Length: 238
Length: 216
Image 1 (tube, chains in turn red, yellow):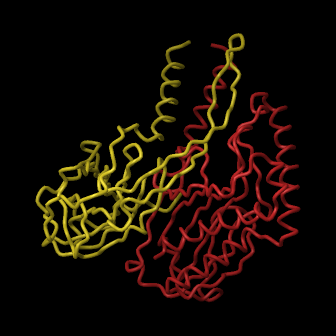
Image 2 (spheres, chains in turn blue, cyan):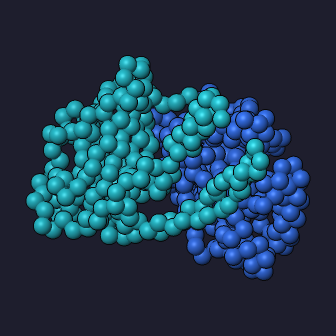
């Protein structure tokens, strides 16, 4: 077997293994957690700009050159999409915070934003002290969002991939850790017990041109997808 | 192709396929219990026992799978009829339970849950709205078990039986095209939609294991 074939096989094997390295899913129990009253929803770790992903491309078959071409095309799509979100003052972080706090309040919590500056993606390595951020619990959320088409002949639909961790403010004990995926690509790559939300067929765009040509509906679709993830967040914290 | 390469390739396929739900046969949705003979309360007799899938492995999760079919027991509470299956739970601390309703074709058992104590008294009830979709169009719930909870009773939710949902799933796949001694991967995207009808019948999997450590 050629070196190329061996390398390809090892690459596929590495991909398969990496898919197994997923976030352990820890359920929340309000009673066991001591019936916390307040939740500070930390400013989420999320990009300012939505992703616009074409998952399967021709370029993927052509190594580094193809990858560079794909990256350029994705960057161009994302810049175009950013224009329509900016024009509508849409913020993914803002949408998630607003809806999550509203739903947690409806569930009886005293919920508010815990404003923080993040320097990297993923969960915080160190949480604010109880003195700096008073409250019973801290909800740490990292998510990516945008539009996704599985391939050249499939439509663009909103997607959100969120990881949540709630810690007790006093001792930072982990009270909950879950994954929520809206419009997941290839569910084998997420934890078996992750929450999945199927995309709303009302927000389907046959290609990128159709997405850009209908900006109000495109932004509304993204806003509603993030809202669905916020709803699932609140359900997991009941 | 060398032997180790074949083994590695088989392992890759096994890993990739293990993430996919086993293809189960399709069964017609049972939507009407009006002709069923129902009791007024749940009988704990016939509780399914959870067993380890890894014999001898300490702290391995315990699991049971049960089909709730046409002969499943049912209860009638104020005119609301439900089929059910009882699972006997292990005792212990720091345990969590995962309840999964697995689709059988387009039929999906619409679950709600009661946790009962040793004497059969209801300790906790969890409604249908707490079950959320998971991979493979399953409906899932995870809970930390509390002291004294010894039986899980999974009942159908009569309020949602008969309703349906259509889930869209997206994915990619790769096929290799041979070029000389190597192959070129060709990637394609696909979508599938599944119409699921919530029913009084289906398949339930219950898993009890330790709450995992938080580290990634």
